[in-house]
Amino acid sequence: MSRSVRFQGAGYRWVVLAAGVIAQAAAATVLQGLPSLAPVLRSTYGLSLPELGVVLGSGTAGLLLALVGWGILADRVGERWVMSAGLVLSALALFLASRAGRPVTLIACLVAAGAAGASVNAASGRAVLAWFPRAKRGLAMGLRQTAIPVGAAAAAVGLPAAARRWGLSSAFVCMAGVCLLGALVVVVLVREAPAEPLRLVKPVAPGPPPSPSSSRERGPVLVLCAVSLLLVVPQTAVVSFLVVYLVEGFHVSAGAAAGLLAVVQMGGGAARIGLGWWSDRAGLRLRSLGTVALAAAGLFAVLSLLGALHWVAAVPVMALAGVVAISWNGLAFTAVGELADPRRVGLVLGVQNTAVAAGMAVTPPALGALVERFSWGPAFAVVMCSAVLARLLLRGPIRAERGAAAAPPDSVVPLPRGNARGSAR
Image 1 (cartoon, rainbow, N blue to C red):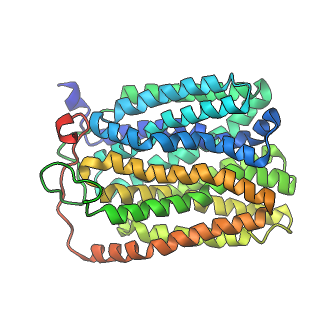
Image 2 (image 1 turned 180 degrees about the vertical axis):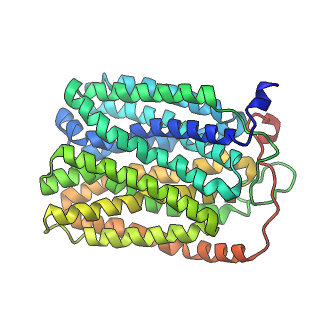
Image 3 (image 1 turned 90 degrees about the vertical axis):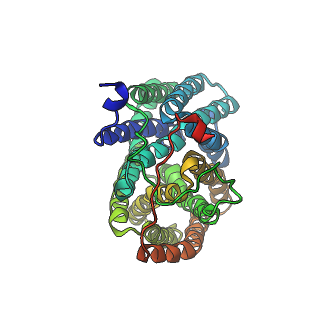
C-alpha cells in the first residue's frame, strides 16, 4: 500500500484537523498571547498606552502584509509546506525579538513573526475545507478556530510566568519553541486530501479561474470580509486591553487579570465549537453570525457605562463580552470558504484573513489613543458601533441565505488540490 493511499482514509481528516489545530495554536501564541505581556512590555520599554498598542499590533501588521501571498502559495503547492515553513520562519523572528534592546527593533521582529505565521491562517483553513464535507465543515472549522483562543489562553498563563521567573526575553524564546513544535507536527502529520471526496457547494464552469472582478461570488465575499473586519474590533479590544483595563482601571492584580483573559479565551473557543455545530445542523451560518454581532453590541454598550462602577460589576460583563466577541470567527471563515471559487479558496481565505488582520492591527493603537484622550467608556462605545454596523451589513446576506436554504441544493464539484499545479494555475 502506497503512502498516498494510507493517508487518504476518511478518518484521517481528523488527524489533519488536529495537526492544523496545533499549528494554529502555535501561531496564536504570537498574536493573541502577546497582550498578556502588556504590563511587562510597558515597564521594560517605557511605553505609553498608544505606543503599547503599536507594539501589540505589530505582529498583526505583518500578518496583514503576507496573508494573500501565503494563500496563493497554498493554492499552488498545498498546505503542508506552507504551514511548516512559515512556523519555522516565525520561530526565527521570535528568537531575534528576545534579543531586541529597543522598541523599534522589537516591532520589526514582531512584524516578521506575524508575516511568517500568516502561513497557518490561510493554509489550515484551506485544509479543513478540503478534507471535510459541508455537513461537518462548521464543526471542523469551529474546532480549528478554537486553536486561536486555546493557544492564547495557554500563552496568557505561561508567558507572564516565564517573564516573571526568567525575564521578558525568555517569553519570546518560549513562543519560538512552540512554533518549532507546530512546524514539526505539520511536517509529520499533514498530507494532501484525496481528490474525489472533496466537495464544495457551488458549481464551477471548466476553464481558467475567473478574475475577482468577474466572479459571481465577489459581492457576498467582499461583504463578509467587511463584516469580519468590523467584528474583529470587539474581539481585539478584549484580547488586547482586558488585562490593562482591569489593572489600571480597577486595580485588579496583573495575575488575576491574566487568568481572567485565559478563561475568556477558553470560553470563546468553546463558543466557536458550539456555533459551528449549530450552523451545520441549521444550515444558516450567517444568521448565527448576525446574532453574535447583536450580542456583542449590547454588551459593549453596557461596558461603555461601567466606568464609574466597582470592578465586581465590570469583570463579569467584560468576561461575557469577551466570550461573545471571540466566538464569531469559525462561522465567518466557513461561510467565505464555501462561497469561494474552489480553485481559489486559499486566495479568498487570504483576503478575508487580511481584512481581519487589518482590524486587529488598527484596533489596539486606535483604542489606546481613544482611552488616553477620553476614557474607557467612549472607547467601548466606538467598539459597540462597529458591531452594530456589522449586523447591518449582514441583513442582505442573511436574507439570501434563508432563500438558498429553501431552494434545491446546488450541485457539487471537487476542490482542486494544491499539488496539482496545472489546475491551480
